[in-house]
Picture 1 (tube, rainbow, N blue to C red):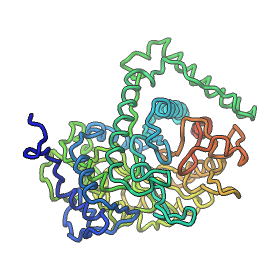
Picture 2 (picture 1 turned 90 degrees about the vertical axis):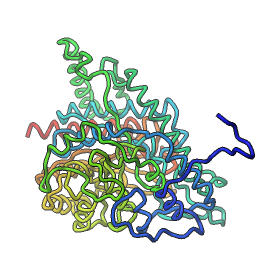
Picture 3 (picture 1 turned 180 degrees about the vertical axis):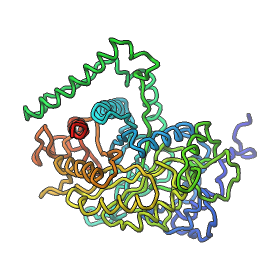
Picture 4 (picture 1 turned 180 degrees about the horizontal axis):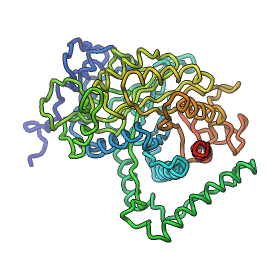
Length: 512
């Protein structure tokens, strides 16, 4: 292979037309895209108004990063994506429960063994408790291997009298003041940190981290209330006895699947230039045909959106950066760029549903992203706050039922319950988080619906960011180990306690 020379320079990767459209939108001084796309393409979003936008100073650097991303291999496969869609269809039909959790804003520094392993173990332990309580399989999705971007209320902030860029996640800029200028090379860094995280997750699962033959750490010494501690110990003893019984009767052979589990990845689809660069036209896996065997009111299931780039029915557009992507409450405008992008991909998708979303707009969004009404294709992630859920959730449930869409209803009890202490520290009260989940469970039952899952910001580490819970953390304890760069997270004990309480609700419900 000839080397580089003045007469024989190394050829740089060529950027696709879709990538060029993204560059035109994302560079200071570049002309904005004005071409109207009659059909969906990976760049049709560039013709729509966009929220939470970011612009870069260096056009050549943006082109280089996007061209690199377009050439890199997929992080996840169509087979994995469609397997998750099939599992989420079961959740939408009430046959399974969805547990989704992880960091608010994932940092590149979290790409290390202990941080990743602690989150895997916590999600596995929580799912085991929920299986015991709900008597249903649990679908596990981690906010991991890609949750590097965060929306902000303002793109700029004041620092010592000078206006600087807000920290918007490691994929865009650094937290240090001297790293606040958006840097397109971080898009490629995000890919490789995602790849390394995914590689370790897959290796850990293959090596038996989820093997139920291994002893589980159910240490409950932090629980101060003796009555609550006794309840948790009863649950732990029941789970332990169930596992022991399965081993005794030989029901724990490799064929039963007790040695590993599926753990999927997810993140908010915020930086569309990154998402579009990893969106590929790929062959559908064999399992894809099974989705069409569950007809809806609109006929056989598919994405149902017209695409200009292919007429091959055996192929589809897959976002290969994660298995599951969601659109946030700040970017879910019906005619906006983010809804335009996400409506065209085969991945299962989520939409955050907040207090400002009218029922009519919610239905319009569902029609836009899922016109064929594929069961479980869309997860509605409600995040009202414990004081507002009573007035808002019933109307949304009834509107969706009347529309003919069958969705996954998921409760995010975190974002609507954020507050600041008198000293200005952001926190959340465990009691408010539990209250919103409990209200969601009850309201769904009253409305003839059911809660399909929970969406939590959590970490497997002993942080002190949310107050309350059986540890009895107070506002005075927050500075003991407050490490988040964005929103406060449940620590491992608080997250497991929430799983115990939700499981207990399902057990009590079965006795009514």
